[in-house]
Image (cartoon, rainbow, N blue to C red; front, top):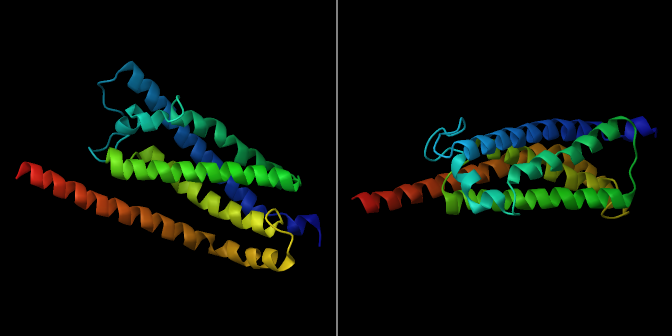
Length: 203
């Protein structure tokens, strides 16, 4: 089988698309952070309502969990999958250790996103629009990367496992939709709880 036929073109294209979207969201959050520093009292362009806004997230300690604004992580981090995607399309072939390191990075991003989702829902009680864009591309990137690492032999050299993983890739969109649905469901539940607590205070 030729290298052209075995090259994961669809996965590479997705990495490029996700990286561009994720980087743009991080860039917009960085711009909003600068605007917030210059005018702390001014509403940001992404402040759509008391529950859909960027200001609360950017001003919270969760918004700078490593001591600097989280968007900086996105500005730098999304460059990795972008380069990998372009390199794959150009015909590059990476060793197993590289894919393992790449998988660790994507897993870290996914874990951070899950933690930030929980913080937004259960601590800050707001949803940041540009943060949600980042979540939307990080989740499927994680699923697709884990399947790819299973099928390219990073996890194991077992031919049966790799063949089974190959069949899982078409299911990544469904897994992504289910993940989105779970986040929406949790947001709705938290929204109802929050409104209930507000009603008790007011009445």
